[in-house]
Image 1 (cartoon, one colour):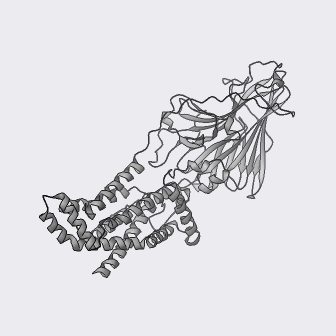
Image 2: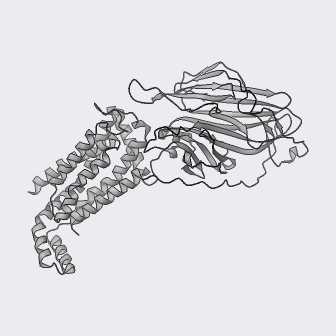
Length: 544
């Protein structure tokens, strides 16, 4: 097998791999039913105000009765809005349910230019429940999430990045329960905390499991990103998984050992974080209005008369920034789709891009510099490859003679060709080395450019205003194809006529593949071709 055949095979495999990785989406599978947790006895609460885990003797003699304190068909009055303003976002909470109604990110906009507005993390429609609701799963007390709470503040404002403030919503049903929902906000974080406390005012016990839900309207008419995912995401048994909205036909239950669950898009995520993952379950549902609910169900507790049970959660609503998510410490960073096998290369490339960006303040220039560094790093291998191809060109007439002489004896032909390579110190495989090296770099940079929010809306020059999106005028893909064709013309031809024709089609195939790729990735390949042309010209002159 000669060098041109090997290159053709490698490039063909590269095209197939690119197609499989970039265009063929895995089919989400139905999730298994929830794994029921084993019954474990927890210590009884020793302090007043703590819940008692179900099964302890502290509540054995207390009466239990099922009661409904608020029914769904009662009139739901409009709530009063409470605004929380931080350096990172503006959130609006409502006294209706003490729930989140809106959250807009100040540092991220829907699109580039004057038409861009702050990204809204909440999607509601009609009379659906507000996005962040609390409830009691399988409890002896049923309370609708739309009851009207009282708030202890008219507004919360945080100006200092290190400042923290609270907002408490309270509701009481006389003689039955009092509920306090205390949110704690931090000026320097997209993460806020929720302490959900229930005080039993009755003479009977309350058996309950705290349920925290994120409700999101999944618009079926919304244009879908070919490379992104919009839908439920969760971290179950140390692994991130997703479930397409259209696959949620019936309720899906998983657990225990759920660290977090939420709803994500390509660049943003709303996530509910459990404080006790080993005792936490996940519930995914979708109603007739296409409202998807991702819920965390905490451990089953018993609240004795005149005592309080607390359920604590953290909520992250913000960008899928790797460093920010990793700092949370619960595996949220795994929600970014860098790929399991190429992540080891995508992350270093992203860190390198961010480091260079700190000096040049343009991610396009940073990509060009990265391309130059990669080319310098593998310069010796490139020289070896081009010299090998030049040597192959010189041996082409002799190889043709051998093919004609031993056309009926393939074994003898291969033996004579290998002897010829050995005498002239030519290695046909060395011509493929740069291709093998570029493939993982290509995939790593592809993942870094496509899924890193740092590249979202990052401009380069003139018409390229977003390096994470395709070139709107297809100029860079066409230039890339032209440079690939020029490089191919400079490459010595040693194969037969059929192989040469097949290779001539490669620039066309790659140009079409790159038309919808992120312009930052096309920029990398374009400048890599330009540098390769320069290196090949240099080697050709040295070996002439």
